[in-house]
Length: 295
Image (cartoon, rainbow, N blue to C red; front, top):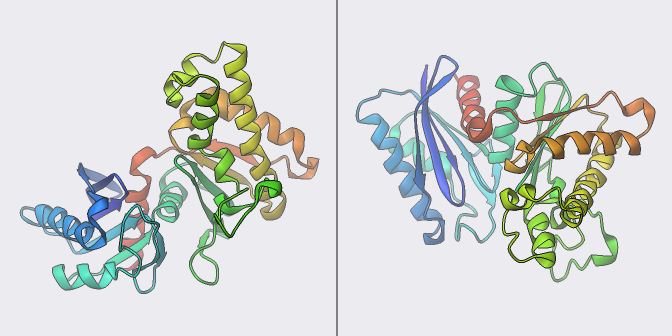
């Protein structure tokens, strides 16, 4: 079986050919998301057509931003980063265009599937996967299967309320929520309030030896831990996989585990904290697994 796999994000569409457990011909194309969902679908068709010109494939796998109904292959909900994307019937559009079976899944779920089969989640029957970036995304694996919930939207860890005093759902559903405090965006915002030159994680961690900067990072790490305490006690996972570029910083992962163990009951301290292993290929590999299941 040979498949073309795409990972559709707000900034770029990553794509590749998948065969025999490996990706090849990896490329990245600007999404041009601001032009809307219909345009994004045209971009996807252009990319897939480019592979078809010299590569016969019999499956298509799609990892995409937004909440996804994987049965119908359509977008349940997408934020305004891709205008008009909500309701897009991705599976139907691409199957009509290419006459091959198409599998569609949310990008964080797809990344978790990739990690389960090829990365940090291998051999773990029950684990949680979280990604820290602009927001906080999440996915759950229970008894070796992705848990989707009653309407395919389980794992919205970023919406956990961790600061109830700041909660005002009428204005913002995410007010007082985990991602407002634990995301990389939140870290940089906090850092820039101290020093406006700390505009990204790379600069911030280059100055970690400064006591004030270290306090900012340590306070942010505790925000991450607050959410993981709840997830650990609620799920009782054997493993929690943490992704996002900021997790490449050894200081972050080490201190998350240290502080988490200090704050959970001893009977839960077997939980392993692991860095995601697949980087920006996780979503594509997860989408590839889904194409194999549809064979």
